[in-house]
Image 1 (cartoon, rainbow, N blue to C red):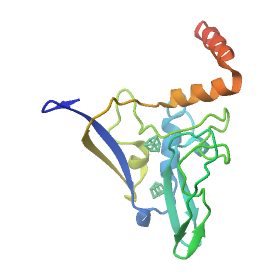
Image 2 (image 1 turned 180 degrees about the horizontal axis):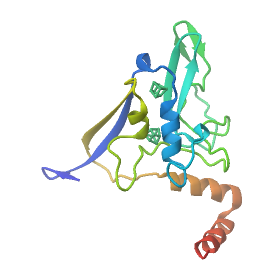
Image 3 (image 1 turned 90 degrees about the horizontal axis):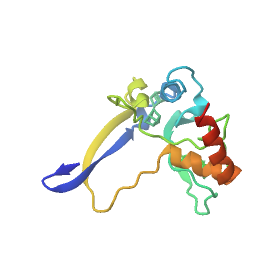
Image 4 (image 1 turned 30 degrees about the vertical axis):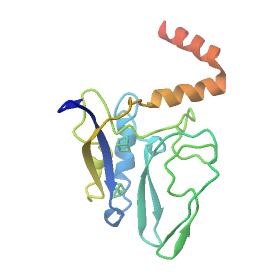
Length: 182
Ligand code: SF4
Ligand code: SF4
């Protein structure tokens, strides 16, 4: 995209207001239905790219969107103290990683990452935002100047990397060729 001769791109963001989240999980349901194959054919919140972390004792619900996959457990973790309660180091982490089951497809084990519901034709706003009638999720777009080439790591990149690591390049290639002929 060009604006006054400067290269720009749109940065998409979903702002979370935890005070408005009631933990209904409509966002998880909408996300999993949108990403079902075929689209809307099933609901399985295990496939959602948003996860609502709940502490019902304290009435805290925190929606977390899946971020980048990581091959290794991290060695620098954070702790959070909210209303006097300390949360475990991984509670609010958005990564799919080897040390837990969050943000992994329940059947294939492949990592899941929020793709902002990018689709063709495009949707007006992400499904989780649309489903949240409590106003806890707000979609925002802003235009930023691009100074370096932009590379985009897609779900497919992450999925292929995981498959190649697990089965080897040759087996993945052979399978792609075989499946494409079916
Ligand atoms: S739909 Fe909204 S209120 Fe319900 S769990 Fe998700 S973020 Fe919270
Ligand atoms: S933006 Fe789309 S892909 Fe990302 S968590 Fe929300 S519904 Fe899921």
